[in-house]
Length: 569
Image (cartoon, rainbow, N blue to C red; front, side):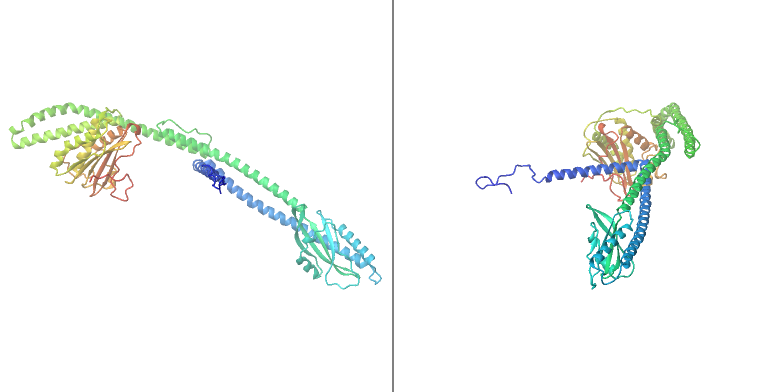
């Protein structure tokens, strides 16, 4: 309780004080838990990352367990052997001492005139004889006590050494000795040595004293010397075991290092080769298994380098061929285009069949021009010769222009082309020409495969990106076809007739345009449910790391990609 102030009112305790230290203890506990977690995470990280640490730790653990088991077994064996030897020695000494003492009493005359003084003298002589016949390395103390229930005419006082531990003689040992079975009775005991507990052994036997009756002889042996020997052996085994484990750890780390260092070198060389440094090789030393691995790796690297060089040269030849052919075809194509335009403009003056041929010629020449333009663009991407020509662009306005451009085509296909723009109204630095080309391809494909169902164009944005989604509800594609939709000249259904033209390169070029902006195009499609293409364009500070502002549709629980497009009510 708070102390009372004059007048009986309690004095309020100062705010923030903790008289019991609970807050400090809680902070200490939190700090300890944090340190433990950090230490555990560091050990786990080192365990996962270092083969040497795992190998040394496992070897040391198994070796330590083996040393502990073997050391324990050896120590138990030595202890049992030492105890058995001392027990046999003590048993022999005790038997000899008992025989000598009994001989002293038997040699005395058993006449009635043996007085008390003579019996006490015999008792002292027997005590000296017993002590002289016990040569155990440890201390020895004896006691001669009258057996209970005796009715002899004379009685001797109980005799004991000055340091005899009478408390260690148990009732069980006294009962065993009192049976007078003619053999020694032995019992392990604990002796008090200045507050320390030392092992000992108590031996009991029976003596027949003339005119005094039956007495019990107890000899207590101190086994501390044997315990010291065992402690020394245990300490030696422990130090030797620790030294052996340390030596095993050092040898294991050395051996593992001889194996791990070449492996690390091979991994580093592999990373360099993967980064394009095809001339990197592993140094070969000796003729062991590691050297064989290094030579095999170098041979493989040589073969891969040759193939990569050949493929790169073939790719350059192919790119140059496509570029040269496209350029060379432009001149005759221009001539054909001029002639075709003249025929197309005069088609009404020709016979119907000739006029129809002029229209077909005009259409195919336009398609041929588009194909040549796409081939040239693809060759520029292959040669990495494309550059962005950015300008301030409002994505929502750009999408609106594309929707208006395709609205007549959508109406002819009986498709409701919708535009939803909850975001994307801020200016971005984009290559407007390339973004328009992407949207034309996506919207055109959606109309072509929409099966007279609504097509929705959604523009949204967040702090890191702007996304434009084009969603149709047409035939759709299985996932394995959706994975190939950006391949060049690939068609999901080759038998399906194109209604709005196209060269088969539009989506491949669109993907390249998106990557050129640091963005991407995600696709989701299911048969009978339609398709969704999402163009994600990151803002400058989030280049290459932004998540899409429009996740993909959540129409299939098994789909593990981005999630649902937001629908407008």
